[in-house]
Each structure stands twice: as structure tokens, then as C-alpha cells.
Length: 142
Picture 1 (cartoon, rainbow, N blue to C red):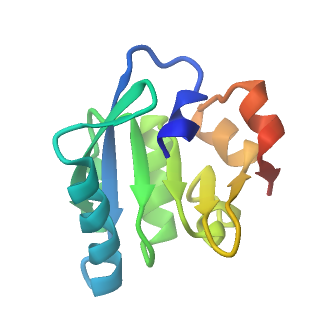
Picture 2 (cartoon, rainbow, N blue to C red):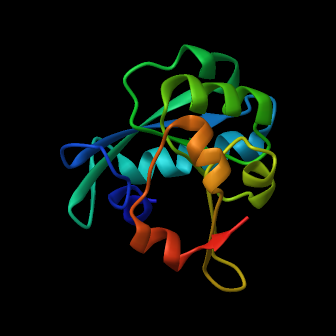
């Protein structure tokens, strides 16, 4: 996620606050977001970026303020994600390719069986988010 965010254009500085959106009705969703939150702690250096996270229930995604990106945990509502991403013009990153194909996120990162990054230029344009051409050339367009 840190490497993906480094390719985002029009962002200044080397710190990114990530809204870790999860579905409170799903223990799996909460566990994924909480694990990432624990990893990030009060600030995790990833390359030249420092990422920090805040756990946010999906019902509160529309009220997001002051975040540089969204991470969507599994089983999170696509409509709420799509609305938050577009309203706040921030990238949404997930592990679920379906979230990208449904217009809720811009980037999906899969690590099994091989690492693959999926990207939607349509979703990025709708959210007003731009990535460097070098990034777009390295990923799979959906």
C-alpha cells in the first residue's frame, strides 16, 4: 500500500493517514483492519512514506475528514466506500478485486498465489485521483 501511495500525484509530504474501513458485523473484516492498524501503529515507515491508520466502521465512512487514503477490509459495503472515495477525492486500496470492479476502490493488491496489483483508471478519474504513468504501466487495468 505504501508503494502504491508513493505513485499518487498531487500529494505533498511523506506522511499518509489511512482510514481503515471495516464492516463491524464481520469479525473477519474487523480482524483484517485491526491487524493492519496494529502494524502501522503510530507511524510505520514504508520506503520514504510514513503511514498511520485509524479504524473506522463502514457506517461512518461518509463522514471521513483528514485522511489521505482509504483501506477497505474484506466484506465492506461497496456503496459506502465508493461514496467516501469520491466525496473526499482519496484513493481506496483493498485486497478484493471485486471492490475495484464494482467502482468502490481504485487499487486491489493480491498476494496469493502471486503478487498482482489491479487498477481502475475509471474509478481513479471519478474520484479525482491521479497516479504516475510509471505506476499505471506496472499494474493490470480492470
